[in-house]
Image (cartoon, rainbow, N blue to C red; front, side, top):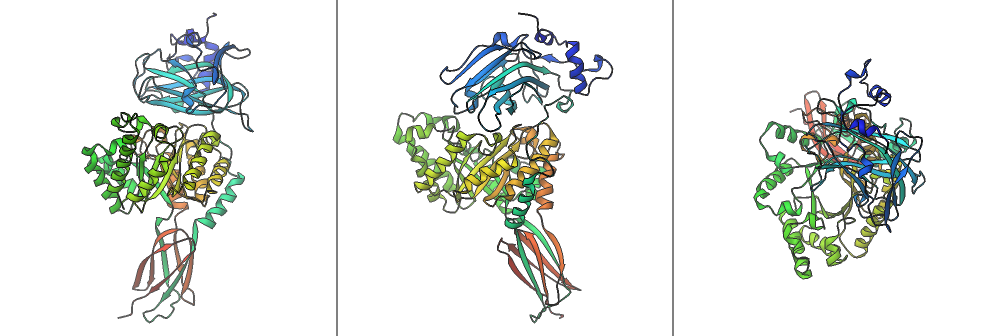
Amino acid sequence: MQKTVWDFLATGRMVLCAGLAFWSSAGLLTGNLLSAPAAVSLLPADPLAQFRPGGAPERWTTSRVPVQGQPFREAVRIQVKQRPAQPYEMQVRFPNAGAVAKGDTLHLRFYARALAAPGETGEGALSAVFERATQPYEKSLQARLAIGREWKLYEQPFRATHAFAPGQAQLTFQAGFDPQVLEIGGFELLNYGASVAPSSLPATAMTYRGREANAAWRTAAAERIKKHRQGDLSLAVTDAAGRPVSGVEVKVEMRRHAFAFGSAVTAELLTAQTEDARRYREIIERDFNRVVFENDLKWPSWERESARPRLMAAVDWLRGRNIEIRGHCLVWPSWKHVPGDVKKLAEDRAALAERVRRHIREEAGALRGKLVDWDVINEPYSNHDLMDILGREVMVEWFKLAREADPQARLYLNDYSILSAGGRDAAHQRHFEETLRFLKDSGAPLGGIGMQGHFGSDLTPPERLLEVLDRFAQLGLPIQVTEHDINVTDESLQADYTRDFLTAIFSHPSVVGILTWGFWEGRHWRPNGAYYRRDWSLRPAGQAWRDLVRRDWWTVATVTTDAAGAGRVRGFLGEYEITARQGGKVVSTRAKLPQVGAKVTLRLPSDG
């Protein structure tokens, strides 16, 4: 085989003709290559030389194919014939040939095209992942990309979240989506060390349909928000004898949204006595009216009784501040998400069934009356080990048991890849709808639809989000976005999509809330998705959240009563403090503004 660019990259040297364009596009060329930071390749000199075909031929195939007219001579062709349960079941892998330190900036570059793909756009789907090569597969990069018909260069700069010796990590290209044919070539994975910021390296310009300021969907969304998220507050001011008083200044101040704007939280930081924990609690109390525990209520965590006092203290802290709590989750029905002893019961169906029943009764019962929601079942599309043994009908029983244990909590089915992944995951959406209908038709006390919203670079256009919501709204149940984040490094893109995602979701009448899956980089499963950086500075996406939730969709108004002692405010639905003031006379009251509107009368005190 001829010598390729890989041979030069393996020794940390650049080919001049390619390097000039590369460093110039990165903004790092200042007259010569001496100013360019040194980069070390993390892949073997010829990655394709180590490529081995994989997969079951009846479901998918991989092969090496020649390429002409591109900066590389060979590519990997992946043909997906049948969609698997998980995208990673159909992937090609390349181990890291060089060491990586935690915090190093890495730069992935590759070319790809889709020879065949479903849907009107003809775009294929591909996830580029850099992760530990063994469990727990910690990921530094997980970018799902839409692949077009023509060869295109894709670039993803990112920071390594863990240190890896050679061979401990892997670059994978996951293609297990709908049937498609993709080609991938020209791989580069370069390590620049910790001194180079990912933002200083070139990245594929990512965007989404509907990002434009004049996009048509915005006008309709704004009208729906006015119609479904606002109400009329009619005010009347009287004197002590009940006679109308004109010319009275009435201030209307919103105190709490009716819509749930929330976040995932941890019991540890809610109870710790550190400066970070103090700031963490301060933001929760200021910016969110609902939370969900990220891991503390999951079955294995719940059964660690030593952590129970801390958890209950966190619950009490939240309830004492009128912050609602979602329960996540009672049953995540796969062996890897249940306590270790549960799998040992796989051969004893009756004992397994009773073990799950006992857990639901115990946990839901212990928190009875303290939670507003429970995710009774989480992610049944790809987590179904328990149903495989106990039968599909057992899901109905689990809902009924949860209802008996906590009659007040609204019970949800929760799953991922319904809104995300470009909104193109037809198999996942179909399974979710079928499961929801099965539960309803079977008499399960299903109270809500939980849609996760974890986004990578494949950002679902707002119009498509609304189409998916319309589809599931036909079930007649409230919808909640239960887990939201946007894991991209382009902070401008992240901020714009935060604004547009929230706007589309808030505008849909069937949606009752949205919870971001964490807000601080210091405690976030995907640090790039956090609204606050590690030093507590606010990212543009966090500013977009605050601008909408606490400014654009927040009502503070002052009116003066007319000759009939009346005034009117059009406000966002929620709780208000209303104060009337005339000279030294002041009267205040609290009121709720529902969609049907509300009437509030304030009686001024007598002169005496």
